[in-house]
Image (cartoon, helix red, strand yellow):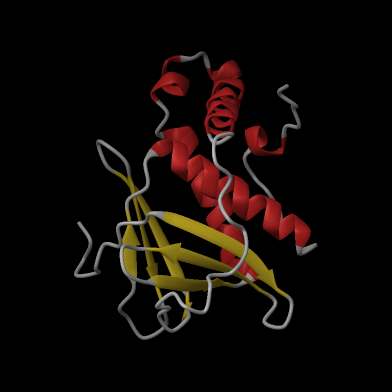
Length: 172
């Protein structure tokens, strides 16, 4: 349920760190417009930990694994999603000025809900409104990875709670 928030069918996304704003900017590309979302350091930390937690709790494979192996199972799922994205890399430049760009939305809250087929991520600015996206599981892993990489690039040193997320494994 979107709680009266429009669902944006996303065809792509771009992320960058804005040193001037000290925020992450996530541009969501819809069918006919680009919607820029601004994330603070605090909300980015909550979102990274929230995404990692919901991915772990909602993983059918991890739920069937012994408790001692669940972090390893979700890490393998994450690495599999990253390997799938080895196809076309998203353009990491901000949208071209010719694209119809909505006014930037400072995200105050983000709610993540698993659905039978995907997830629903609702972003809300101060004062109400907002928008929802419905990324499939693999895309949510990719968004999590992008958020982590760009917060590290911003040198934010955010606390990461889930153990599987801090494990450093290289897949060749």
